[in-house]
Length: 636
Image 1 (tube, one colour):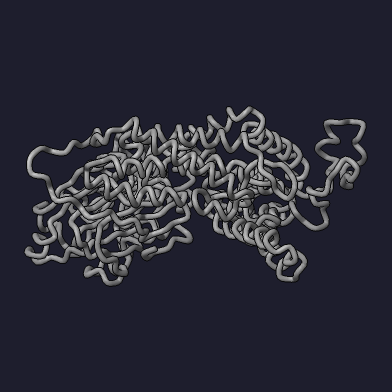
Image 2: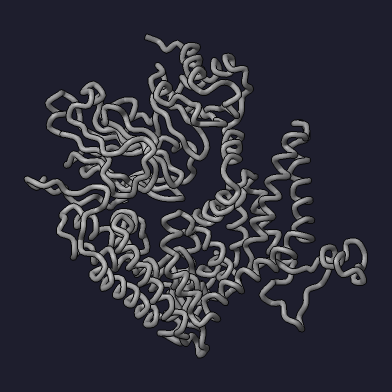
């Protein structure tokens, strides 16, 4: 029977807590997107039971109801008629949702949103720089060859043009035109300006006296006698300039008549942004950024190692809180200045110490399930990806996590106290890129032997302390039941099946991964509910594919939705298994639970599903895939 769009809209509205509780409403290809003032007034259970609503998620301040392609727009039209609301765009809904976030959370989240997408370019350039320098040292004659010059150009491009990369990424985050963002980035390193790295007390840039010579009025001269110098070596002024650009552009789009909007808005946006950037933003925030970088360097190199020791201990906590991407600003700034990233050895020490602690857990524990998680998680941590080790093992048992903190602190102290020799000069241990730690860090570090010793200290201290502090007790949230020992699950898969700029989805169910199009269900196969993959299970268990929050688990325990790292994921076990009414399924979480990567969510009986006449193929779908640029699907 055809869906009654009006009735669907009325029932949705009836369970939202009244019109005053709805801030904004929009829709995309599959979902009705609502920003709610007070979520406690929403009857979530009743909304899930509304005929036409296929699922519900809460993400980044938005309440999203999955309705489906070709249907959601009709329900949306009726919803506007029922509520009397006016239509809003997805961007406006996202803006309204973001406005509900605390200011501190917005500020700390922004650097990660900007710098994570440009990581591949920075990592590639950093690795290339390390390889080129290594070849030049190993073969001195190579340094004078055309090949060296050519490869050096490739290696340096991302850093020479870093302000442009930052500007483009910032424009995407702030909702501005990315091409105008690129113009602002290029403008700040324009070849007509003196390169910032060339400025010395004897070699000063020329000045634009736009309002005459103001040298007798220092405060006005500071702002309006504009120095003709580029912003190589800076990132914060770039970000703020693009934030201004995006704000001006969006406001102009609202007030400029459409007939002249195409010409007036870009022109005014660029002129206003350029003037304010070169007269106010640049002079002030380049100084403030220099203070931040100087403070970070002082903390690492001038405190007798105390600052490095403290950061080595605290770094894992920022990973737990999801705040570690804020360090990207500091690391990018250090690289943009033309020096080494001396923050990287601290991050690497902290990460490698978590590897040592997790590896120790593998040897200590008698619990076969813990062993099956600990080994692949520790190997992942050795490569710089610590979330499986931290959330799957160390933080669960806490004592290994503390041992890792101590190991990271001791190793960071060692790194801060030891100077290394680079091309005849004594400098701090540092890297030529950011975003790479652990074993891969060997390719970008300026002194491999010292770095290797630092990593061995981190791993060794954490490994030994874990043996001292932890006796292999079970996780506090779930003790093994006495009696017949259950069959040990196979190793949790570690390969990713979906990747987005801010994270990845680890295969949640052991088995063979198949393309989404091969899932034996038309709704899943056509991508109506989002892009993803199917899994033909070899074991009846669903593990959390990343750390996040359970946004929904069906009463029948055959499907679960999880949110985190900007992803909204639906894991649906089997095809039409809702008809089994929970027989053969067992859930281990409830809505609102915070879960860690590798945590068990559901158990299911594969044979019972087949005997009931259903396929056990499990759908793993990124339900907000149409909102994410640059995601990848497939085993990796």
